[in-house]
Length: 417
Image 1 (cartoon, rainbow, N blue to C red):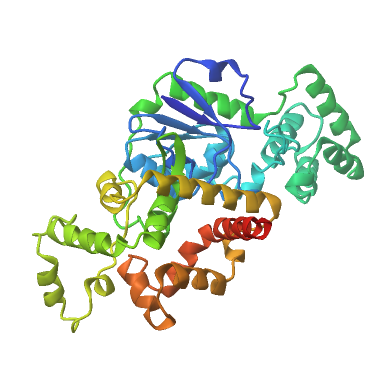
Image 2 (image 1 turned 120 degrees about the horizontal axis):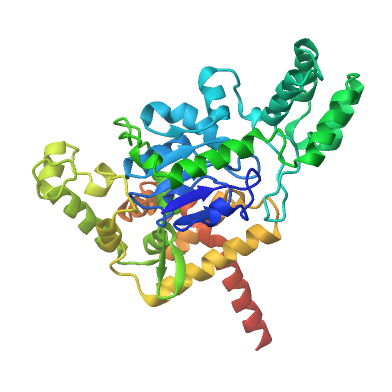
């Protein structure tokens, strides 16, 4: 399968994107390469991506994909930029823009940045600087401008903030610089060929052809360098894991945190999980009973959950099976309700996130659910695999809007009786 992440650079209606075995995705954003639909042996053609209105696709997500045996091709826009940065690790770059980044002829994401339509069609509203640069080079070749005047005009166009670099703004800048003849020449060429000067489009088409003709399949996929899978990366990958369970599309992380918060038996399940890890270590070392490992640690009688804090990988099916062994159908329905309540809070209050939930509100909620006092809070959080009070509070905030809604409905129902 060839996965093409594209938006304003190349319309979805382009014939090459309708070829068998091609799946078209919107512009890439943080988390997209964790999608289980992108599998080992597939090819990803990265062209467009978002970075202003949402978190951008990160380098380590691309490294992780290549480490899973996915071939990565980049061109035209953020794809060219990421390919230039990650070529030493096996990402294949295609086109003039990629070459320009590699050579240092251009630098910075402002070269390829554009304003995108907010209607879901991802149409380009502005001109990228790299296309204007190319048009100026064509104008010099056509003797419309000399090199010095072209350089001055490029400098003036670069000074326009990228979301404001519309055709009207480009024309105004040209006229303000005394280059109306260039603006008229460019307008005429665009009337004859609406893709005139569109270097990004040309490179995007070349990248798709590279994937379709099998050239990308011969590129070397390098393993990521050791030690790159940081705590931050694990957090991103865990947050991206989703699964359809009995008709419900649920976040695996939400399901786990629900068990940690609401299941009274989860303390025992976490202890059993630590025992399992001690007897079956992932690093190939000999297994040991947890009590023996704890004694060797010499920690003066501390419980195992206070000593060992394994990094969870929710992509691992065995880990998920062990930790969610006590999950019920009602638990999954509750997770879905709370996720819907959180999504509604975000829609109804622009800018809302779980960070806006006050710590003391989440802390009081946990104290009530766990039926413990302040003095036992840290110990309870640790016994449930949440390490300490602060991380437990942060994790529980995702449920607070839903709990608040349920409480309000119950109070309203009682008042009506």
